Image (tube, rainbow, N blue to C red):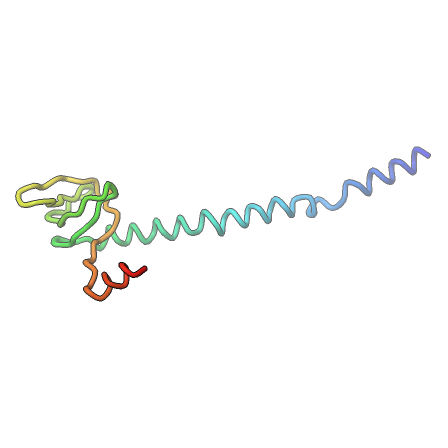
Length: 111
């Protein structure tokens, strides 16, 4: 009778690969849903920062709009108004500002 109980316990342990399969699936989901898109976005942001040049209109992470007047790593000098220049850490440039065309503004108002 003891031998029969031991045989049942050995069968209950199952395949070790089968035990880790749900964990591997969850890790795969986390990678493809969170880590990979963040790495891609970070790569695009670094490319944007590398492509900055004088005269580009940019938006900072705090939402200010200005024109780049000087670039000296790790800082960028941005002119926000006439004779108002502020040095900003380069990584705090969120994006380049592209002024919308007249037709695009009307489409945005309808939506």
